[in-house]
Length: 428
Image 1 (cartoon, one colour):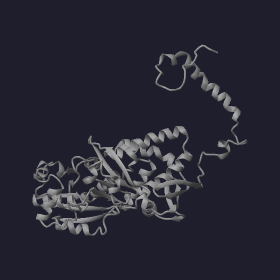
Image 2 (cartoon, rainbow, N blue to C red):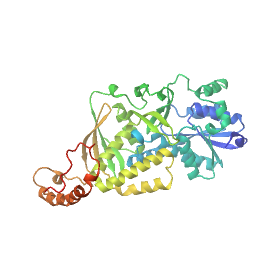
Image 3 (cartoon, rainbow, N blue to C red):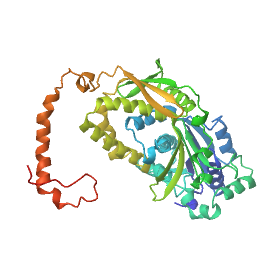
Image 4 (tube, rainbow, N blue to C red):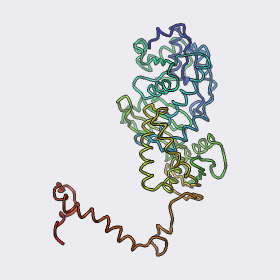
């Protein structure tokens, strides 16, 4: 889609109020389009006053500029990420990815109410976000067309990067806060921060070059550990440190407590983008990290080995689906539905010890569906498991092991495996 097709038409944009948003909005208005700008309130830690964004967008030529409430929706989606332990390569919690789906869905409602059938966004042609916006819109509202300036040759010809956009904004006296001196870019919501680009594109730049926005580095964290408890009921965190609070507040409390102890701060990941290039990011997600770890400790109690294999497979699938833009498709919907029987078992109060970026297990209470039994697992005398019963178990396992030794082991090149001499097949 090209900008010439937008002349005289109302179009709805997903905007953050940053450099790209301001540049694109003004450029589109100058080109003859009528941009309506929508910013979703995702509890962005880097925005001191979200109400400033509509003023900036109106000054950049927006026909209207609206803030949409989105924190409850983001909390619900973030919980699904935790429930699936949906971490992408290197442990990334998919905080930016999941927020794109919330943003798109909420803005599409606004477009529908205004009979606007064109959505625009400022995601670049090199990243994952363009895919998330596009596929989410295509699946939720197939009649809506998506316009991406960074895929329009006319826009690309005029704006090669930040320098040209800043010059454009200065020429037109647009109220942007960005400067060429900013060493990297940040995408923010209350689930986490994504830092990338700028000086972070060089692998010689340490992760500690980033100034944390949701906590502190481990060397600046308190010298004393802090105990943190989470009460889970049927897969949902309902209380922090004994206080029952709504889900958004659960995330906020977890962010505050985890962040001040340097948990989930500064994860360095060089990942494979869906478009086929590698990118380097430094991530913050203190609340996701502490909540996710407490959930994992309960999973260890309720999953047997076969259920664990199923869960891990679903987890990996969901993580990739979120990252690549397929949150709303059949594979993700089916995988999330398959988790439901497991989530109903995940209840209990988990205590964690947080210390300078580390999370240590402190204890679990009230995990009534736990399969763990100290009596059965004990190495001491007693309990329902008789050590002697393992004799028959091992004999059965040994049948196939001995058959393998006699019929196949010698046919394989095992010289590179330092396990000792080959078996004396036939001896004994």
